[in-house]
Length: 326
Ligand SMILES: Cc1ncc(COP(=O)(O)O)c(C=O)c1O
Image (cartoon, rainbow, N blue to C red; front, top):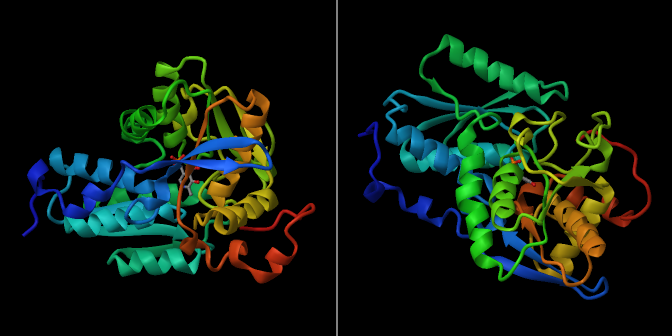
């Protein structure tokens, strides 16, 4: 029997596994740098997006926004869809995910396995197409509930009061820089606010794919750091306390991700490698004593069918790469 509200004592147990992820040192001896990496890939569905899914859906339940016949509907490039499907399953809710036909098979399988409905659409490379489609569907069918990850203020608030506070508790002494990529911008804005408030001199740095450095004022182009940089500067980044950006080539992100697998035993996705490249760059600029924090956002298993695991791509790990469709 589905209910409209949820009391704290009745949270499904899987929700207690979300957040409070460990922060580990990553020692790069050759570079003489130790980074601090928050292990978001250890969230139960495998990515940082579990936090958003839990916060938005529990809030909706508690405010009575989810009726017994409600359908949670979101357009996503993958991680948010899997997270919403997981939390939705635990809450006994129907979930429909809109995803581009270019989304990987692993993502599709996981979403369906969690019992969600998947609607694939031809995005023509434009993420906004899917967002518009979800709005149209919601306008014609009142059963749809839209988490609206790209504009929902809960997205930023959750990282400010959750992820950001965890980082502040886990790092001893001042934080000199926080470096991560952005999709909706929620993580960067929320953690950035929390860290800046405690350590005003901390530098909040956005990692951007070099092939699509929008914050750096360059034109959108295709890159293959999945999960970040969807081709526009998201609204949630507008009031983020950003101090700069570091551009990372997709080829360098892939190479570093493989290094994280083989030298550190950390099975993470491509954006984690990109974050680490940008964090290393920042640490080199700030000097060896600087405390630089970054995020390992999701798990490697999500990328079996991508360039990260392609033998051909691994053979040619260095040198300039053409801009390939993702
Ligand atoms: C795979 C992945 N998912 C999600 C995020 C964070 O996304 P958002 O900006 O939507 O908080 C990142 C950020 O680096 C990421 O790499």
